[in-house]
Length: 335
Ligand code: FUB
Image 1 (tube, rainbow, N blue to C red):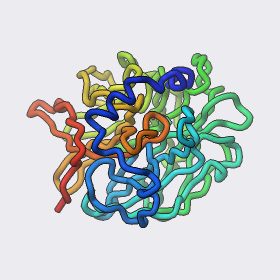
Image 2 (cartoon, protein in one colour):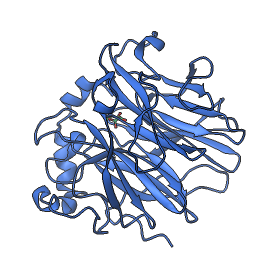
Image 3 (cartoon, rainbow, N blue to C red):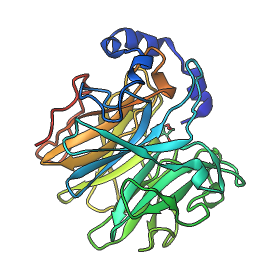
């Protein structure tokens, strides 16, 4: 997203929505901050003791691990303040346990700040965390990769340098082009990294998961803003992404991960008072879930103090996706 655009967006819209649809969810944040690490299952947002954003979830041995960004902007400061990432786990999608923060920008010695969106994937018993940060010496955003033997960390920088930096995508004139990594491993074991803002990129990864294996390619997608997320169901690949600004989540489908992708339309509407809603899609215990963020906690929530929510995702018989219904109730415990 454009930072300038974000700064302009304190908007009446945010307060109108808060007063309306989401008004009943506005709770005093000071009270919520006293909650213990395990959150009471009271619907959306699912994490109430701190602000969480940019969810990325995956399932490992019967447990869902949810990785999030951590919004720490003081009230009324309309800018991102994000220094570390958080991890939560659940065996039912409703009761979430917070673990100690396993990764921070400072763990990437070559990075300056901005713990933006990320995704974790498992390969051969190791967990690889792809994360967007501001590079300290190469102008703009970059993507690093950290590794751990446990999904809850601690994670350490796997390279000692950026995997993706702005000098590798020179056609892009914006400094925040290289953000929002999404990673996928296909049936043959080939790993792919997707990312981008304004332009969607992908590249193959080597089996070590820490080096590119070939050129950086562009994915032609209509009105792509950011937040690509790749998933597969049956024979279909899905590439969902944020579109426009404020952002809706839209999606495309393909029989092959390298495309061509066919645009299919809107998956999730604008998330109330948040300009972004950054999705993650998983299946767990026979049900599909759409995980995203809104700005519904507290009247100071909004675009820079966001909160992760979960609602159901449903497919049509032809493989297309039904539009997500965002709710305050959230989901029921998965059995
Ligand atoms: O959290 C910072 C940025 O906001 C993310 O990288 C984008 O996807 C948007 O959610």
